[in-house]
Amino acid sequence: MDILQILFFAGLAVFLGVRLYMVLGKPSGRTAEDVEREQRERAEAAGAMPSPPSMRPPQEDTPFAASFSGPAGEGLTAIAQHDPSFDPKEFTKGAKAAYEMIVTAYAKGDREALQPLLSERVMKAYDQAISAREDQSLTMTTEIDRIKSAEISEASLNDNRAKVKIAFSAELASVTRNAQGDVVEGDLTTLKTVDEIWSFERDVTNDNPNWRLSGVKPA
Image (cartoon, rainbow, N blue to C red; front, side, top):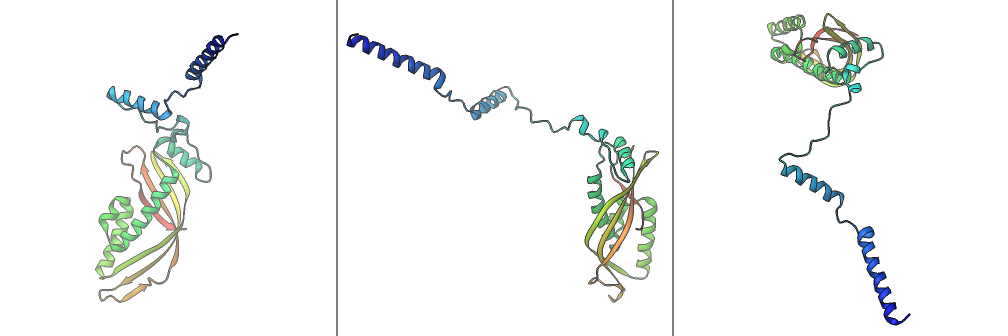
C-alpha cells in the first residue's frame, strides 16, 4: 500500500470518527433548563403559562373519607362527613385561640368581642356578670401564662347540631380592683391552674363556619 492510500484511509477514518462523534458523542446543547425555557416561551406565545401543579388532595384524603378513633372518634367522624371543612387538629388550634380571646374579653368587659364567640345563653350569663362588676365599679385583669393542654374529650352530631367538647388546662393570673384601684381579689403575681371543659357548637347546615362557646364547666 503506497503512501497515498494510507493517507486516504487515514483521512476517511478521521472523517467517519468526526461524524460519529457529532451524531452520538457530542452534547446536544439543550439542557433541562433550555427545554423548560422553550416550553415557557411557547406557552407565553400561545398567551398562557403552564398550569401549576394541582393542590387538590386525592379523593381518599378528603374529609368525606376521614375517620377518627378515640373516645370522640365516632362523633368527629359524623361531623366530618357533614362538614367537609372540619379538621380536628385545626379545630383544636382555633379553640385555643378562642379560649384566650374569650377569657381576656370577659375580664375587660368587652361585650362586642364576646358577641360572635358565644352562644346566646352564654352571652347572656357573661353580660350579667360584667354588669354586676360595673355596678360595683370593679375592674378585672386576667393574664394567661400558657395553655398547658387542650384535648377533644367528646363530640357529637344531633339534628345537624355539631358539638365538640375540649378539656382545657391553663395557667393564668387574675386580679379584681375597686374604683380606687385597691385589690379586692386575686393577684397577678400568682399563677393558678384552671381545668375546665368548654363546649363549642355549630349548625353544619349553616354557611357561617364559626363555632360558638355553648357551655363551660369545671373539669
